[in-house]
Length: 117
Length: 109
Image (tube, rainbow over all chains, first blue to last red; front, side):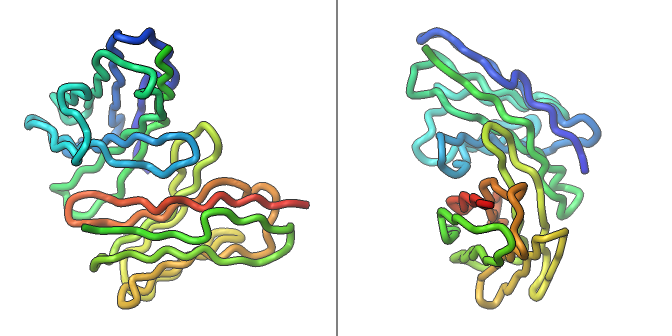
C-alpha cells in the first residue's frame, strides 16, 4: 500500500507554545487529508478534512483557530496546535486519499503523541 | 449522521477459541474497513470490504459485509496471543470515514 509519513512521532511541549505536525504522502498525490485525535482507550475522532489548496472543513466542536490546518501541496498537510494546553495532550493521526481518482483506500500516518506539560 | 456501533468493546478470549466482533452502522454505505491498533501505534489495515456479501480472510481473521443489514463481522478462529490488540471497524460516509468505538481483544493462554 501507499505510504503516509507523519512527523514527529512524539513531542513534548510547554503549555502556551505551538506545535506543528506534518503529514506527507510519499508515493501518491493526496488530494484529501484527514486529521484525527485519539484519547487513551478511545476511538479516533475526526477533527477536520483538508483538500489541497482550499480551507479545511472542521468537525463540530473543533476550534479552527486552535487547530490550524494547511494543505498547501498535494503531498503535505500540516496541523498546528496553537497555544497548547494539557487537555490537548492526545494521539493525533492523519490519513490521506487521492479522491478524484475515484475510490481509493485511506492510508494512515504513524501518529503523533503530543504531551503538553 | 453516520453512526457506527461496534461490540463487544472488551473481549477476553482463551487461546484456541473462536469469537466474532460485530459492527453495525446507521446509513447506507458499501465500503467498510477493519483495522488493528497495537498500543501506542497507528492503524494497520486488515480488510477492505467494498460490496454486499464481500468476505475476506487472512490467517485466523475473516471479515464479511452485509450492506442490507448494515452489518459487518470480524471472526476470529482459534485465537492466539499475537492477536491481542484493539480492532476498529470504519464505515465510508458521504465525505469521510467514521470509526466504531473499538474492541479491545485480549487472548490469554
